[in-house]
Image (cartoon, rainbow, N blue to C red; front, side, top):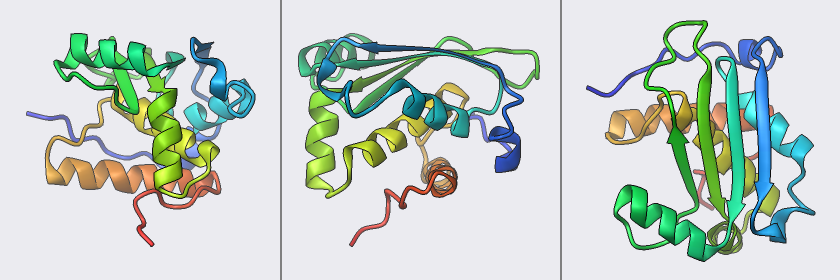
Length: 167
């Protein structure tokens, strides 16, 4: 049965009480001037619910497609993949560990199609990936609604418009 999580107050998340080890890798450097490590750290911290170790990696379409094929059986590049290395974060002493991979080609294309800034789109995908790493999912309509609402709330605190709002 999918895990349903109680959403803690955003003040707990943004208080800085959760330790974070963050590695940022730009295998595809096209976004490296726009999306800086301080931006990424801020977006991760906004969605972080427990102590964590994250690697955020930006890849090209070829690497994104290979990862999606090898790990999900889907033969196309997707915007974000989360590789979570712990099943449960119910214990307050657990450290959340995950690699979050963003495909620059897909991210750039989607931002243009959705008329969103690159920064806002990447922030949304990082928040989305961090929530996945902490047990959130969108396999059912109920889970999707919960996750989308939480993403929207986090992004609003960051001054980023609702990514699910259509014009």
